[in-house]
Image (cartoon, rainbow over all chains, first blue to last red; front, side, top):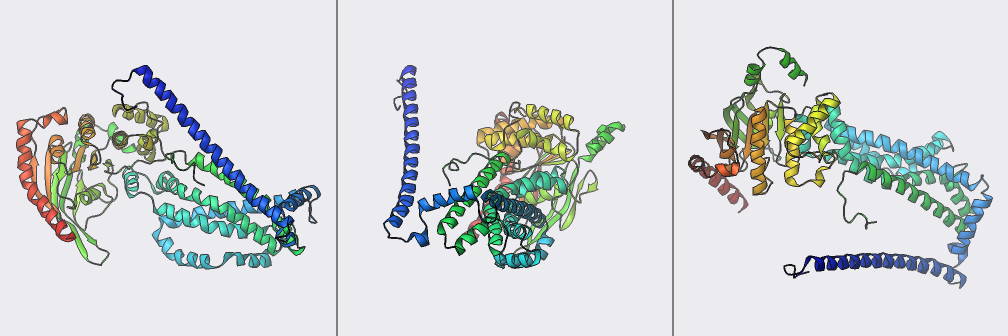
Length: 291
Length: 286
């Protein structure tokens, strides 16, 4: 392609076509290599686990066994648990996590945006929020269970508290990062306080808020599960706790797998929401490759 | 927009509008408290007047308080002493009928080009249909018809400036404040944008205060050039530019003998300040 001055148009078209198909082939080869690597890694880890337990290097009684986990998983789905069907337990946990997530995210956004805009409010409330944040919040689960019994309420509250702080700090920071000249510009254009919040502050903070929602849903599940482990009548946390008490590592791993699938599903939904709300952002070239 | 309608129904509109656009800056002083607790005087006793419909350029070395002056004219900031009067009324709070163009992009990246231009009318609660029509009209005037649905990141620097220009002019301001609006553009784009700015300015004739580092730009565009001193900022000299209007292409006016003469005159005044400011900053870093 370096001799462009003399090359005829037809020739350069041909070389362009060849270059394009070569680039496509290289991209395809790369994708195939990545997938081969992924599958190989899974085969080594799971296969190694399976083999080392069959050969007696590792005791399956303590560490479980992939084939045993799979069998236990099918069993759980087919025969349920001693506290109702497995589906029902999954649904309980999802409900608690979703409700806690919603409550925590909404209050986190409201407080973050309010405190981010008001210096006075943030000066007054700031130290208290930091103090509460310093408390190991999982322990709050015990208090909620004492106060609200072993129903769904304490789990929702625990999940909401965990979610709140993540979303709150991100919303607060997002509001603080609003571009000064953009703010000056809309003020000169005659925007009122509410108009500034609606057209500038919230959209600007949304990048931060949505980024926080990814990790926040994981914490909502953690809150729900810990609440269930501490005391419940139904839910995946209870299934795990029972499996633990029965020396059934396969049951623990099987339930873990289900939880992972739930979190991945939620992650996918939040990713969709993100693409929809932040469609204005320039596409980052590395985003597709990043984890 | 409501006030505009009120004005339109009363007789003698033109005269009232004209007097409203006079900017009188008198004895403007601004002091800041530095983080170390010392008082820093950014501006001291700045006074000049911009007549209605006049294009006034302000030049001066870096850090002479040009931007500070502008933020007090627009009402974003309050003076420590002295006053700014717009149309005879002292500025307190955001001045009505002012538009601001910044050096950095002040566009909202999450709004489309059309949405950005619509901001002014939306904030003034202009009916949607009317606002849309005038936003499209302004985009056409700045040569961006067909780009309504793009986002700012999809545009070039010059195109973003055009959007900012349409967004600033759509409210048909009495006063247009520009803080090095074309400072970040390349020389060719800057010349084209300057020429377009002059054309648009001649259509609605707001009073303009235009800050720049570029003396050529100041002389080519303005009716009056204010030269400021540095540390603390004050007015050193005011020059009236008597080049005839309409001036046409900004690039061609530079070859006129009168332009060169004026440019030399102002540069003689400005050079001393620039050198002094440079010596100060160089001394500070050494």
